[in-house]
Length: 464
Image 1 (cartoon, rainbow, N blue to C red):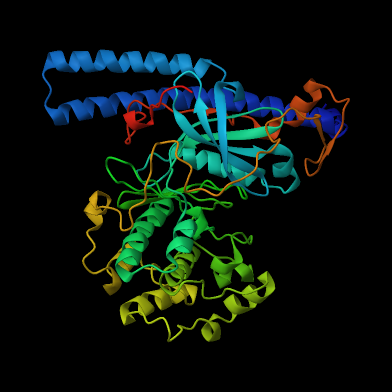
Image 2 (spheres, rainbow, N blue to C red):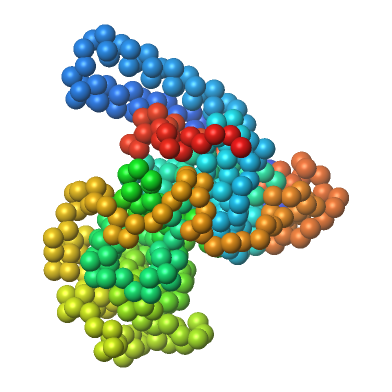
């Protein structure tokens, strides 16, 4: 009987094995989601009780608060049962574009809330073997509920694309700011680098490495009333998690393939100008590679260009690998010895790099003298940015519209899930069967008790 069973299993077609895997994952996800939802609901209830105790509410006030919370939970259950899709959003403008998709400013039709919608083409994810990376991005955005991490409200999919619905931060990105200013003062640099230190550390505390820290992955949000700033990543060129700054603070989530810090990563991801040499070497690296990237950004802020900037990626690679000779400070752009020292502490051998002993080693560096990390979010932004409204896109580059949201011929995904080619006679059922790698991608956030609260009133713009 055992031999018969083995023979039967080994003789199973690839299609049957795929269907079995899909059924297994579907069942596992269904029950794990039920357990997770129950645990999350219990956690929210416990958090409510703790907050009420801290506020010293009377019994009647507690009863009213519990009743309100119960109504929110009921509303959330109703939301979880509804099927969210592209038709629920009105596309306003493209604000970012990359190799795998794009980012659009959108407005939810029933509420008028404005969001940034990241759209990623499934075929590209499969062809470039990025499924694990985009899953990691989605998972960390679900897990993170931090002032330093861009909030994701929803994720969903259709036959062609994956969608991440995130808060929109209208201040543009750090690269645009650097292009406008050329260089920043040491005071402004201290402000932004200090925030970025806290932001990167928040990602490391979650157990992830960012691996793609660079100026155009830092978005700014200037709120009209509070003059707060946020920094996040909306780029669609690589799946990864998000990074953000606020008023006086900064957020980060990992963008490229993410990995737990205690382990080592081996794949080369990121942008050549900002990649640490150990990443290029492919002998294994850890979270310290993010601090190298921050040193490069600090140099760029003060000097006006990255230290390893070259005409070609190959030349940039050569300069990074020979950083002992190529990392020089031009005499025509004088900076303080404290600033030079910190840059050289970031951009050095990984075993000697600042941060190896923990983030406090960085925070206590003389360059950050006078920084109040506990209240940095309450500081006015170092460089004010004018924002006329929550849907103001004037700080973003102009992009022509695309057909990424238009219906196209269905894709036939090959059995090994490594290539995709358009066909016109493939059934929806078969396409769905090939789509099992994206199971459990859908997500809806309970907004009532998260640390950043419900959608703020300034986001509740009128319907268009």
